[in-house]
Picture 1 (cartoon, one colour):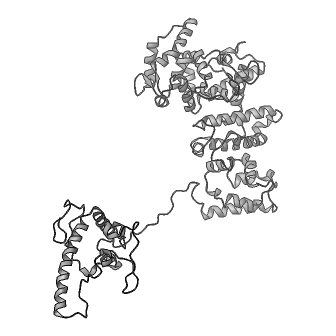
Picture 2 (tube, helix red, strand yellow):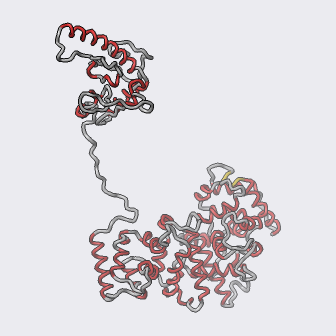
Picture 3 (tube, rainbow, N blue to C red):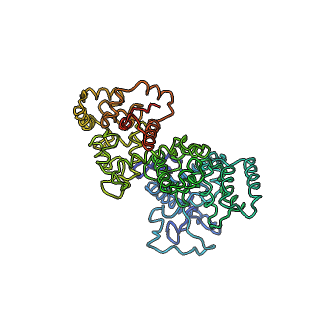
Length: 572
C-alpha cells in the first residue's frame, strides 16, 4: 500500500482499505506538536516580500515538506495509527457525530508522553490554546460528519406495541366496574358504618365470586386492624384499586389464602376456610358435637389437596399448580352442593371416614403411629415385606412423623391414596421410586425380579400355580410397551393405562390375582361410569363395609374379611 506517493515502510498491510493520497500543507501542522526548532518559519512573513526572501522561503518550505512527508509515512505505518484510522471509519459508518481523536493515540514523540513530561506552555502569539492534533482541522468541523454519506439518513421509528400480557388478568371493562360498584353500593348502603364478619358472606359470593366459606379469610385480609368492620371504602381499596376484579378465580383464591410475604400456599393457609366450611356446610352439621373429628376431617382434606395439586411435593403450592388442578372446580362445587359426599374430589366425608378408619384399624396401640408390622396387615396382608421396607426407608417420600421407624397419619394418607389408585400420576411416581432400587430413573429386569421373587414364594405357600418370572416379564412388557426393551421409565408408565397392574404384579398379590380373574360384571360396571376413579370405587365399597360393621351387621354371612379383598363389591 502507498500513502502520499511513498512506499510503505512497514509490512505493507494496515488492516484498512487503501486510502487516497493525502495532501497536507505545512501550515496545517502545529510546530509545538512537532517540536521543531524555534526559529523555524514555514512561510515568509507578509512583510518579507523581497525576491531573495521569497527564494529562501521556497527552499526552506521544500526541505520541510520532504521531512514532513517522511514523518507522516512513518506515523501512518504505526499499529496505533492503523487502529485510529479503523476506529474513525467505523465511527463514520455508525453515524457518530464527532470522532474522538485523542493525543494518546499519537506516537510517543508527538503525544508528549503525558505522564512523564509537563504540558507545553501556551503560545505567545494569540489567545491561549491547547495543543491540537494534526487532524483537528480536518475532523473538527461537525457539519462535515453530519453531511457524511456514511451517516444514517434518519433514526428508526419506534413502534409502540400495546400491552398484550397481563399476569393478573386483563383490566376489567367499564361495564364490569360499574356493575360491581352498583352491587357494592347496594350492599353497603344498608350498613353505612361497615359490614361485620357475620354479614360478609354475601359480598364474598356475589361480588367477589368466591365460595361463601372464604368470607372470614377475605374479611381478615381487608380488616388488617381488627376493627370488626369493613367499610365500603376499605373494600373498594382492596378489591377494585388493587385490580382484584381483573383476576381469574384461581388467582383470587391464591391471593386471599396466601400470606402477604409469601408467593406460595402452605397447609396452614387452608385451615381457616375449612374451619368455616365445617361451621356453615349443611352436610357437615353432624360433626359439630365432635371437634376431634372436625380437625381430622380438615387435615385429611388438606393432605388430599397437597397430594394431588402440589406436584413438586415440597409443601409449597404454587399458583401455576393451582391453575392446572381441579381444586377451584371442587371448591365451587362444595359451596353449591348440600350433600358433601357427592363432592368426590377432596371433600367427601365418606372418603375421609374410610381413610381414618383404615388407619385406626392398623394402629393397634392407638398412639396415632403405625410401624412396619402394622402396615404389613394392610389389605389382609396384601403387601410384601420388601415393598414395606422400601416405604419405611422413606425413599418415595420423607415421613412427617418425628418418631423414627413410625409412620404418621399424613404419611398414611399418601400411602393409601397411592395404593388404592395406581392410575394417578402421584401414585405412579410414589411406587416408581420404591421399585427403582438404584434411583437411576429406570426399572430394569433385576429390580423387577427382586420384588417378584417374594410374590412367587407367596404363590407357592398359598398352593397357587406359580407364574415364572420369564413369563411375567413378557406379559408386563406387552402391557407397558416401553421405548427401550428391558428398561421401564416413568414416562413409559404414565403413557400406559394399565401401569397400576405392573406394580400389583410385583408386590400386591391380592390385586394381582384379582386382575387375573376379573369378574366381567365389575368390568361392565367400570365402563358404565368411567368418571369414577379406582379410589372412588374402593372408598365406596369400604364405606359400606365399615358402616355395616359399625351398625353391628354382618357384611357377608358372618365374615367381614371378604371385603378386604380388592375387586369385590357389596351385593346391594
